[in-house]
Image (cartoon, protein in one colour):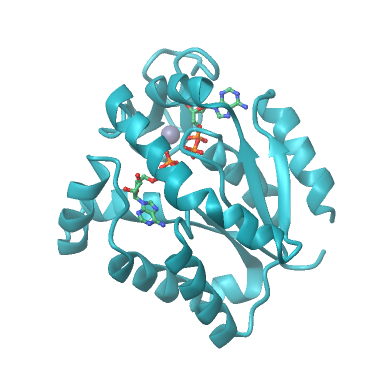
Length: 218
Ligand code: ADP
Ligand code: ADP
Ligand code: ZN
């Protein structure tokens, strides 16, 4: 199997994180989620975490000066070289997309596909406000659509499930509007390069993943 270099681009709540777990398992790529990196920096109380937190709580984008730097560092590590990668939640605006072009050119990498999982906004809001995450392993659940066996407890590690601070209706609405004004224009940018893979995200998790695999191939 050829090493894959992938981006995932859907709006908040589309299932990027959920599908990333499947993609990582099937293709053995490194999962690089800028949102997860910021949440871990917040948890560890770093200076970057403190800065990122103020933007995340409002549903705004963390400044590019910070975001581009962490992606650049991460992509340069050996595991991305050997295993390929799935960038989840980056780029999110045109400047980040241009910065990514520069980073990839420096590392001599080409992208294989940009996965766009789309779902309509009303469904996204319900997915976001019902989302629960394992404090220990990061696995994602939903109180209605993807229930854990025991309420509040992670199936895979027994960890406690929590609600992300930015998963309120108000913040979710702002994130969706940031997505449509800043991130959605990137779809045309990648479509023009023939990289865009469009997936209907309003289907069962397994069906969404089957569609992704069909499009990506071996
Ligand atoms: P979701 O999966 O719901 O889209 P993420 O975990 O990807 O959420 O992102 C959560 C928040 O982290 C965003 O609302 C934003 O504040 C910040 N963030 C994540 N990725 C980026 C990025 N590429 N640029 C700027 N901010 C980002
Ligand atoms: P993203 O990373 O794009 O913000 P997540 O993968 O965290 O999205 O999914 C958002 C919420 O929707 C989670 O609670 C998740 O369990 C749920 N979810 C993900 N995919 C589906 C699906 N295909 N059908 C129903 N619910 C889903
Ligand atoms: Zn867990």
